[in-house]
Picture 1: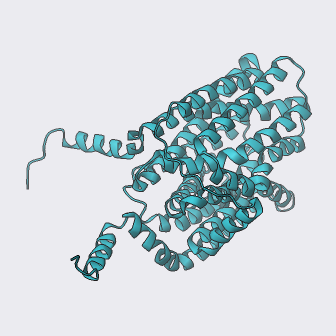
Picture 2: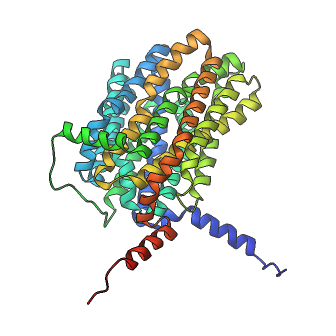
Picture 3: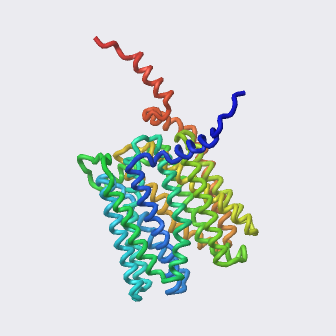
Length: 448
């Protein structure tokens, strides 16, 4: 047995970390990652500050729901149109515009709040405005990743690092918001969020050599929407992934809406209990993002999609049954991690297999499935919880997630058959690609 080299374990650990961060080797992605890391903390501060402001102004859970609905519903309504324009426009410039508009929206909230003249109507209208901006920003941001990362094999790593960034901000932002609100009020959260957008705007403007292939001719918007929808729904891998994601988002993701009920009535805690539960979900999601970032290939993600959806459903069922805080925290970590794995694996596969001229439209459908279903899921969860109770509502949603995962698994062999040629063409399956090249060489007549 060969002697173990001193420091070999440390070198292997460093190598693993470098591999897990390999997307940061691309300068443009590194700029994007740095700018977004700052901006997203501000975004989460605004989310918490907005909820607290609405509750302080009105004390109404209904208006909390209305505000959330106003911020989310534009993604569902405008998603198809946004996807067409994202395919037509330069994505880098589109993101610069959406970030500037988002910055102005935050400054408007800050001005009204700090001036002491803000009303609930102002908050709802400005939330609706941010929702319209997000309807264009989300598909543009998702589609832009492939332009920053040249090697498709590194796409999964870039998407996983994005998820790590989002979940790290999800842990830091609310904590900072709580401190700022307690010290100086909600208005300063909005002000800091507005300032944080400068980081991402500067990072976007500093990028160079971004590949941008725009269509030479445009068809009618409605025709391009139908073309994108026919492509997404006509290709089984894309259709199956989007439908499962939409189902999980509809019946599973609204668990966050019911968390105050579990914290107060089920686990007999208070605001701190709610913070612990949401923090545990964020920790699980962050850990899952790191695991995905360490993956060496997109191969095998097809299995991850239904497994993660089923684990998410099982976590919801277990959480609905739990009456112990420590067990509920553990199950929240499982649930948060599984949901993140499902979302990121779905995103990675879609980004890898989609045709470039339809990327914006497919990613707009992804945004609709993931975020656009959330307001309907929240309304459904609230209605069911009033009749069945929060625990049973969560267990029912978890069961539906598991059933959807089982249906996806039945179609997995066909999905693999359709995806394999694409992976081969991209060189993701080297041995198959080599075999195809060798076969072509055997059948190619010699040059004279």
